[in-house]
Image (cartoon, rainbow, N blue to C red; front, top):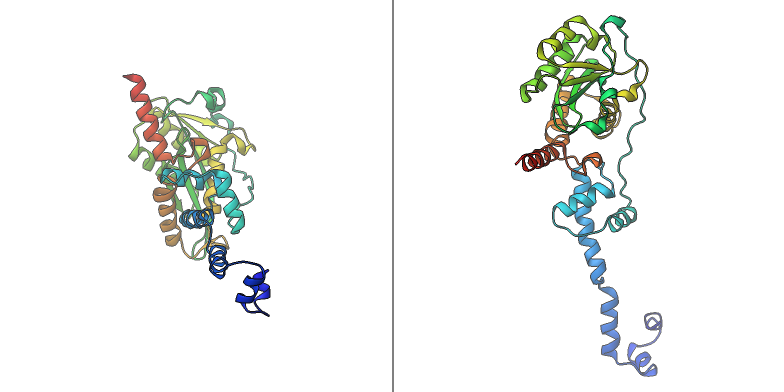
Length: 296
C-alpha cells in the first residue's frame, strides 16, 4: 500500500501518518525484493536440474533426474524436482510411436523353440545367461535405408555388439555376434533369442551357434513382444538419438552418433528404471560384487 501511495505523497509523510519509521519501511522493502532462502535453494537446484536435463538429451524426467541428483549428493525429493520442472516447462522427450515390424519367415525346420518363454525372465540370475538380438532400420541421406543389428544381455540390458550396414543379410548378424563375443566369453548353454527372420534361421548362422554351444531361441511369428527388451531399446535409441526429421546426413555420421550413444552414453551413463535406476555397466558391477559376496 505504501508503495502505491508513494507515487503521490512523500514517504516521510506516509510513514508519519501510519506511525511507521522510515528505516523500518525501507528494511521491509529490501526484504520483499530479496528472494527467500527457499527461493534461492530452488534456484540453485533448478540450475542442476537443467544441467542434467541437457546432458541427458532432454530425455530424463523427474525420476531419473532425482536419482542423478542424489548420486551427486544433492538431497531432494522427486516431487520437488517434478514441481520445478513443470514450473520451467521441462518435459522428458516422448518416445516415438512403436510400429511392429514383420520379418521374412524361414522354413519351419530351421525355427528354434521359444526357450526364453520356457525359462521365464524371473529365473535370470546372472550375466550371459540370455542374449537377445534384433535388426532395425536407420535412414541416411547418402545411402538411404541402412540396417542396424544389436545384441543385448537380457539381465543387464547392456548392448554387447552392434553393426550398421547397407544390407540385412545373415553376415550382418554374424558380424554383430563376433563383436559381442569379442567382449564376452559366455559358457556353453547361452540362449540367443531372436525373431524368426531369415538372418537368424539360415543354416550357416544356426550351425555357427551350434559350434559355439549357443542355443537359439525364437519368438512366435507376428508377435514382436516376445522380444520386448530389444524393441524397447530400439524405441529408446530412436527417440533419444535420431535427428528431428529422423534422417542422418550420411552413413558415416550415423555410425559416429551410434558409437557415442551406445558405447559412451547408453551402456555407461543412462539410468534404467528396470535396473533400479543404474546404468547397464554399473548394474553389472553391482551384480558381480553381490555374487562374489554371496559366494564367499
